[in-house]
Image 1 (cartoon, one colour):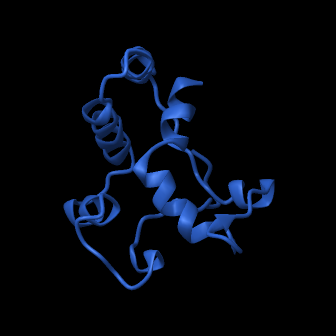
Image 2: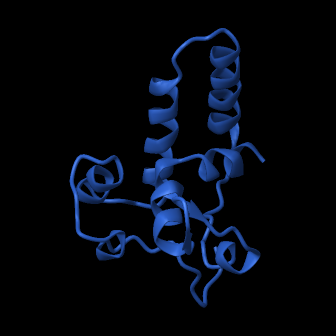
Length: 115
């Protein structure tokens, strides 16, 4: 559950969210099961890293401390799971720009082979 929480709050998911989910009025997006079914969530063998980081993030937020470094560590681990290149990581982190997110070759859509 912690890994799924981390994934859904990651920069990678937020990037895919903008590309895969239809935009509505007022800069909002349509959330429907059919759109979530097109996103592949890779499985992890050991969720310990995510459990520890999410617990720390929760503690830091409760104390009013910044969680940016912890969140970046979680993002980097997710980037590693998806084997993203340096250019893809930079784009997702907002350090580079393309005219459309779909120009990036990150494969988050479901394939015939389930993970």
